[in-house]
Length: 137
Length: 358
Image (cartoon, each protein chain N blue to C red):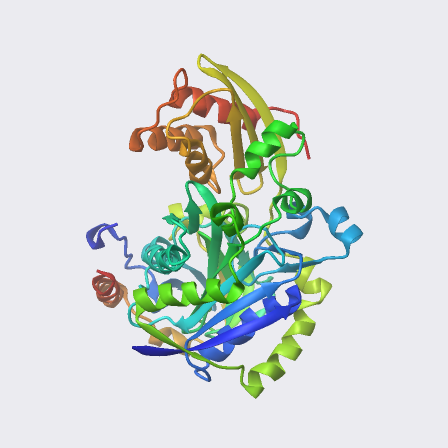
């Protein structure tokens, strides 16, 4: 995939582990970005921590497997998992085909709103992705 | 030249070997130890991939009867059988180690190619088969997989030295149950070993030396024989208890999955195509296929490559057809009387037959 084709939305925040965060009051939806899923490749297995579990920012909240590689899903925020997306648990490939919509991962009750200020906006994330892709070339 | 620690582990139990992967990855990611290459030796055991379910992959009755170990890797991929006729190699390194690509596909290729070069020192002409196998004339001799923790990664592989295929066939749930002896014999041709290729079993130290030379040539690494630190030894004792637990080996994996075996015969103008397919309908994936019949394929390995291409792919009819068509159009495949449409129909019919064999 070319950099120009990479979908980066303006209505969400981003972290440097390629997660998007969509805050909604005291909670937030979290998913992998288009670039994040592209780096991982065709997702074969996806495991998410159970609902109710509290995660600190930086904790592993699940695992993901593609091409015999198991990667960690690292929580961008501190909070409690309110909901796991049943669609991606059933069909992990949705994270590949619809990373910003049907393929969201978890809904989290935020422990604090203070962490939200640390995220990148669309423009900043675009530069981050470009830097990453240039480094890979 | 970069200096790496080399740990040449003695024969350990499956639980200890699997725990060792976690310990070395953890200590490398905490910066407590240098990049490390580990050689492992095994007693008979079945190892499932991190996300797999033991009951779907392993013939439990066989293992209970023989008292051998089953365990779970921290890396991905499918179930494997390991014993004294196999060995393992594993790299634990920082993700930013110069010379090792960060892109996974490129990392697979460069590390596997260093093993290929190592095998050439033994007189074995192996090749890397994307995504992450090493083969000799289309027959698998090494499978690989990996994982990561914080800033470090583990990439490891098996090497078949004097492999007991019959035991593997008996102890893993492979897509060959209900097939006759001739077809099972054909399945055996999917793997090979150093003994089969060379006609003798090289000494373990010669094999390790050859692999080290391959890594040195590709990555410019100097290996310094070393031991685990006291902290690693202590952590290994603790982690071995975790890895020996039923919770780790069979505990509730939270990934919904299933496994069913389907077999179907399809009569093409060029002959009968028998497709045996292990399906995961929950995840809508083909886990593995085994394609035989009385047709003639050129090159001979083309069917093995097609099986590899279908592994873990979507089992939806339109996706199967697209994958088979792409495979035929991108490769010079000649099967008199069998075209891409016949092959995709044969696979799709096997997927859709109502009889389940497992």
